[in-house]
Image (cartoon, rainbow, N blue to C red; front, top):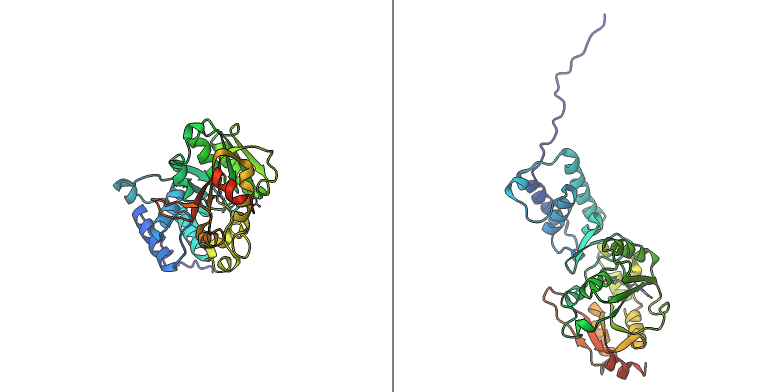
Amino acid sequence: MSTTRVSHTRPPERPPLRTVADLLQDGTRRLSKARLHYGHGTDNPGDDAAALVFHVLGLEGELDAATLAWQPGLRAQCQIQALIARRIRERIPVVYLTQRIWFAGLPMYIDQRALIPRSPIAELIEAGFAPWIDPDKVTRVLDVGTGSGCIAIACALAFPQARVDAVDISEQALAVAHINRRAYALGRRLRLLQSDYFSALAPARYDIIVSNPPYVGTAEFGRLPPEYAHEPAGALWSGHDGMDAVQVLLREARRFLSPQGILVVEVGNTETTVRRRYRHWPFVWLEFQRGGGGVFVLTAADLNRFAKDL
Ligand SMILES: C[S@@+](CC[C@H](N)C(=O)[O-])C[C@H]1O[C@@H](n2cnc3c(N)ncnc32)[C@H](O)[C@@H]1O
């Protein structure tokens, strides 16, 4: 005799779908508890949670009440939880998970082949490098160590009449810069070149040479939070005292600057070493409204005077 067994236990219930407001709140709580490091395009758990929720759901701007009360489908909810888990477990900066960042008011593509754009130089570009240069006279710009191309692209858009050259030693980083250049249709005005600093450049005179080179020394590099391990080491580390790149720029840039030109370089925390080593140089250290520092300006005239003995 055959028997049919009937289960009286109910199938497990699906967890209730959360609203967007809940997802934001819950994400913020999980990220806060994990005590992560910020500073790669976002600076707090709430912004990280929002970036991931917005990314998966394709949201933009301010959220209205209806969107906050919306319950996205299960697949989207799982995607959000999985990204939050990766942010916590693998310590990946959120911008590498969303592959999108804003720089100087411009959206940029980014992935782990290039440093996450965050230079305060963005603010200077937005101001057209005022008061350092007459914007109408800028015809050539050089970006040394272009990475994702963020500085070069922002310069090309700030100076529509200028030609911009951008160099990087890393083929991988240049691949990211190519993606961004294509997105801004700058193929004719922005030249991307693989080069060890100035070595692959034909003789030329630039009105602006701008650089956010690597400037982290060995000791500091060893102490960086895990998030930095996702960025290319060659974009951060620059010799035992972090000075390798800046020394090349100070020595070589004058051969490529026009007589009225300027050199703008970010050196971050290495500012102290730069000030100490080049005590008599007339660096002007810039202040930024949105924070950040360690950026100096030198005029071609000053560079010619002081760099000739290097
Ligand atoms: C701090 S990252 C800056 C990237 C980008 N300019 C930005 O602000 O986001 C420094 C860049 O310099 C490049 N770099 C390192 N050594 C170089 C060299 N010898 N010549 C040219 N570029 C170099 C790295 O590959 C990296 O892309």
